[in-house]
Length: 142
Image 1 (cartoon, rainbow, N blue to C red):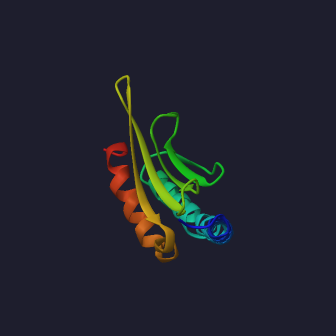
Image 2 (cartoon, rainbow, N blue to C red; image 1 turned 30 degrees about the horizontal axis):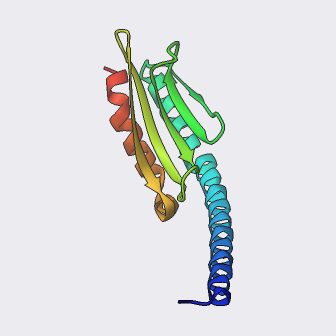
């Protein structure tokens, strides 16, 4: 049987490793959040605004709003019909989620999917944001 001093040594080692891992995760998460906020500000929000402007010239009125950590384009006058991108930092890895809400009769249909996560976020550009918006806008502009 192991001696109690050896067990205590291994427990101290495990606690120290756990703390180091938590500190590293916190530092990585803070860095990812800053990068995500920058991406939102420099890529996602401008693309949403540009798309809303282009839709307006085609006779479709949409409104862009930027709640904390997200951007939303919604059909003017409807709170249930919208497309948004949200930064989710609640998990181990930062993720950009796309959420679409559509009103059908009395039913609100919501669909959500991950657009990019972790290191993929640094590769996300205008093209991917536009591709997502174009695909999801179709039911709103028929």
